[in-house]
Picture (tube, protein in one colour):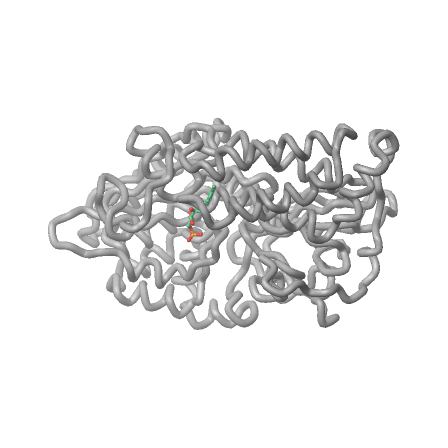
Length: 454
Ligand SMILES: Cc1cc2nc3c(=O)[nH]c(=O)nc-3n(C[C@H](O)[C@H](O)[C@H](O)COP(=O)(O)O)c2cc1C
């Protein structure tokens, strides 16, 4: 059984409220942190090896250490609760059921970073959660854990909850800052990075909800103990939101030492695939990470078991591996159409492109149109090569990584399931009524790795 740090009290009645959270040991980490120096807290976070849980996996302590510290200029912590990546719904769970772990994490992080005004920027569609967060903020304030001179420490903190504009792009950190400042959420050119010029041009740290919540157990147990959980550079626990063709969709906290096979098939987690169907493919880290066929999901190209952690999931690069991303684990069984699925994602990215960069604005539309043509049985063989070509021209050529996020699912689908795309072109009528089904990828066979493949 995986160790639980963030969700350990999730089952306790009333844990949403301060009194119950406090009774379970809540705010003890904050009390401990306020007696430490900001430098000591930073050291603990660095030692913990915590990597950002928003998708990129950048070391949190290192990010905090980049924060510019000019005298007399306010600094800010902004919590990214935009969570719009299809397949990812773990932050929602934390905020809805255990909001105080986030508030406590913000208090510790703000004290460490020297932010007296911190923000939670929350996805607009999570319309009921801001009230929950605001109630938690009020409760914490009444108990002396927010406001002026917190617990006699001399440290002041206000937290504001800002509802997002309902756009996926507003999860990109600089688009988020634009939106928070009241403008259209267009990503900014970097540099300058937010650590130097962020919100209101002040030094700013943007962190994911789960990253900030994880600071609470890190301070409680110490960075060194936290780092002992997990493996390699995948320390601590990770929340995974699992969905698709599984018996038990939900949010799971794992300690990153379990295999992917165990995560999908054991009753402790996803509980296997319904109706005795076979596993066809999986997108393990949210819609933008590469889809992998069953054989490469369960084992690496060398035949080693694949584990639910950053290193193992990305082993083999994009040729044979994928990414941990934000932990949005989407399972596809043998009845699912990879081509249709890829079209759905392409439509999403096309809709969500902010339109600033030509390759993304135009390319995502072209990809969607070509995929739709193939799905509708009007595709030609050359369309598959054209699709490949377009995604290559988007990747790496845009201001923000939304372009990459749109390109990778298309690239991976063609790389691993080209036969299914060709089947759609060759059998336009059959494809309308019958799923292509499971391919040879269901069985572990070594694949040829293309050199210089992206
Ligand atoms: C299009 C796009 C959407 C994103 N959406 C989110 C999001 O909803 N939540 C999030 O934490 N990070 C999101 N990110 C990543 C953020 O830009 C940023 O890296 C992250 O908030 C940093 O937090 P972390 O270091 O704690 O992971 C997104 C990135 C892109 C390019």
